[in-house]
Image 1 (spheres, rainbow, N blue to C red):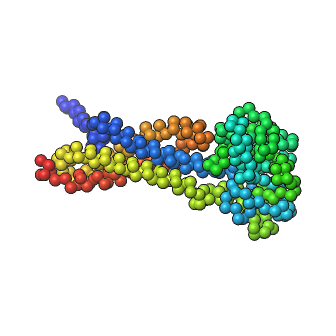
Image 2 (cartoon, rainbow, N blue to C red):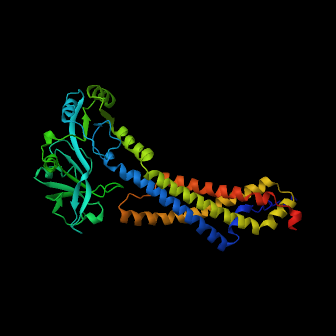
Image 3 (tube, rainbow, N blue to C red):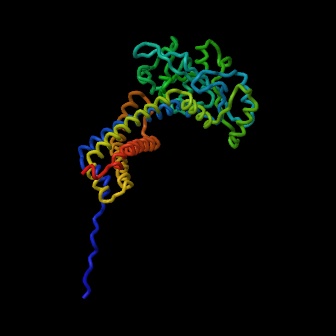
Length: 391
C-alpha cells in the first residue's frame, strides 16, 4: 500500500522592509505625515509651474491659422511690437495663401473700469476685422464676432479676475474712460501677466488711437493656406517675399517660441522649480531623520542579522526598500490631498491647476529619489554596526 504524500506547506516569506514598516502603526503614520508635507510642497510648486505655462500659452494655442507673421524683434507674443501695413499687403501676394487676417493687440495701454470698485485696471485687448475669417478658435468669439460690427461693441472674458467684474451682468462699461457696450462673453482665463481680456473690432480699436484700421500697424498676421498646399513650402515663399525684419512661424513653432521664452528667459519658471527644490531638500531631511531614528531603534536586530551571517548588501537592500515604501506611504495621501488643493486654489486664482500623468510621474520620481538619498545617507549606521559592541 502506497502512503499518501502531502505537499509540504511553505509559509510565504514577508520582506523584512515591509515588516519593519508596519510594525509600529503610529510611527508609520508620523513618517507618512512628514513625507506627505514635503511631497505636497513639491506638488504645489510643480502644479503652479505647469499652470504658468498653460496660462501663458493659452492665447497662442487658440490662434486659428496655419502660419503667422510677426516682427522678428518680438521676444514673446505678449508684447506690443507691430509691423507696417505695407508688409501685410505683401503677404497677400504670396502664392498658396487662402486667407490672411490682421490681428491687433495691446497689453499695456487699456484700462477697464471695474463695476465692483469703480477703479481702472489694466487689461489686454485683441482686435480684428469681424468680417474676416476668425483669428481665434475660442468658443464665444468665433460665434459672436459678427456682434462686433456695432460701434463700440466688445466681447469680454467671463473668466477674468473677479475684481474686474466681467463675470457679472455687465452690459456697459468704461474702457480708457470711453463707454463700450458688452455684446457677449467668452471663456479664456487670465495668466500671470494679464488679469482680463477684451476683444473688439478693428474699427473700435482704431478709435482709441484716433486713426483708422488702414493706418494702424499690425501685431500679427494670421494666415490659412490653400487646401492641398504644403505649409512648409508656403512658409518658405513667405519668408523669401518678406523683409528680414519679419519672421514667419507655423503654429507649432509659434507655440514653441513662446514656450522657450517662458522656460529660458522668464523668471517665473525658475522660481517654481526653486520651490520644488526646497520641498525636495526638506523631504530629504525629514526622510533622513525618520530612517535614522528607525535604524537606531532597531540596531540590535540588525546587529543580530550581521552576527548570524547576513551580509551588508542584504541589510542595505532592506533599508533602501523600506525607504522606498516609506516614500510611497507618504506620497499617496499627499497626492490625494493635492487634488483638493488644486481645485480650491484653481477656483480662487482662476488658474488651470490640474493633476496630470506627467506631474504625477515627476513628483513620484522626486519622492522616491529623496527617500533613497536619505536611506543611503543613513545606511552607514547599519554597515558599521558591530554585533560585539552592541551586545
